[in-house]
Image 1 (cartoon, protein in one colour):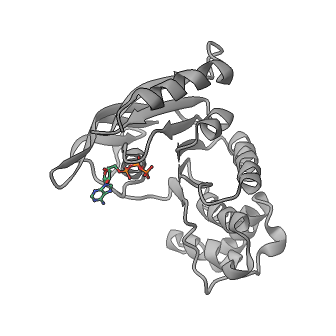
Image 2 (cartoon, protein in one colour; image 1 turned 90 degrees about the vertical axis):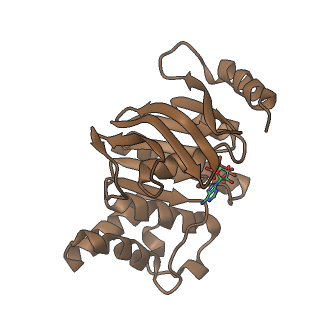
Image 3 (cartoon, protein in one colour; image 1 turned 90 degrees about the horizontal axis):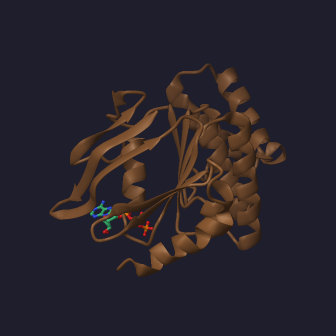
Length: 238
Ligand SMILES: Nc1ncnc2c1ncn2[C@@H]1O[C@H](COP(=O)(O)OP(=O)(O)OP(=O)(O)O)[C@@H](O)[C@H]1O
């Protein structure tokens, strides 16, 4: 459903991502893994429509991606919540651009907050919420519009280990329940192994794909795959 054809990204003279071909099947869960600067966020932002490719093209259901759209929800490491809105207000605000009537926006927002286990915190402000709860609001905000694709850029990078684990479980549940296509950017091999069906490993200088591990076809277990990925990350020049 998402297809990158020869996607290349330059920032000025610098080649951030060399020509890359990738496909993400509908309903799949893929992690993009690699060292800092290898172009993970850049590729995700091409799919999101925030960064236009300098070469090649990104397609969603066969149509070129020309900008952000409600079919793609995004979650960042830094939650970017609006401090003057409650949790519910933040989710409702994000729904505003879809032109839903107010009552419907509210119902959607409350349902999304309930889905992430925050029904009781809907009227709290971001400053009254823990990091994990804020990230749940950000997840609710992305999911409220019922996107077909959820794009996540190091979403749990700022959380402590226990909260991070809980959020991973929540994400796995939501993915199984909704069938949303997920593309997750992470530095963390174990996070990628626990969550995804497929791990695309990237290297820097210039950013490129160096391996594509599939764990969903029964041929490789996470235990077999882990040392191979660690070796790939270690041997690549940074
Ligand atoms: N807006 C920008 N302008 C100029 N250069 C950029 C810009 N965004 C990213 N880059 C450069 O492009 C390369 C890829 O960056 P990108 O953020 O995609 O990597 P990443 O793998 O996501 O890294 P990290 O894990 O640190 O977030 C890096 O060399 C980075 O410095």
